[in-house]
Image (cartoon, rainbow, N blue to C red; front, side, top):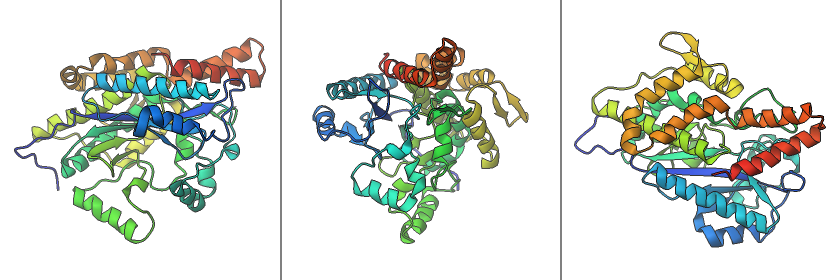
Length: 383
């Protein structure tokens, strides 16, 4: 069943929310902290309330903006969150970094947060969870109608590899240059119920499948479905989860704005009784791998012509498609920032450059890794 627009046409451009997961590091050594001081989270919650929360590991902290009516509001909120979390961390002799992997930390050294949900997850997933020393960024776009959420989710899967490619920030793992621009994806792929979302004919169709897993006792609820794109179980939103955590605030806002405008472009098509072509996951997964491996460097497949196309060309085509939506939303500058990402590279490129330049200047491996962390600390707060 396809969504049929009626008299009320909920606009998916209207609200947006962004979640980010930061890592807590010792600024002297650059390493992740093992266990958080018991006063840290209460101090953060005193200033930020429910906009800050614990994560799976004690060395992580998650923030989430309130519901925002524009990218400009999201900019203000996220800037305040980064600043406040950083200030409280500094009061505890810590610093924060925004990246999807730490350059050299050992997962086995990390302590799980004392929370029943996390402890159950660790017991059930075993070694898979013990490797989850990764951070992500999630973008929620409000879509009130249940069936419209599913319809847009089905079509929006196409753009997910493009968003991953623009956001890559995890080239290192346990002190090694992995050769991948988003090693986070290699870790995350070990979890169940991840990857590209399945296609459903309606919201009730989706809910029936969720109910099977819940009734079987495999999951507690839909929050344990961790696809790259999903209907949020808590909000009337479509939640994008594929992207790495961007180190700079500007990159975060760019990714969020492109995603939001892409959904609205699909909505415009739908209200005109048109739709974006839905490609098989087999094809999209190939682009997902290319983004995971190469980021923006080696292009993605243009399924229409059956060829790998330079990412800069694909980006220009994307920007043309969403120009009307970005103009109406007042976020042309944010989506156009993607051109700057192409020119100067993603966080992954820049981390690798810091590391390799350090080695070229005669530093040893440990010193070069520490310089990457120093760069991440500074760049996280550049806005």
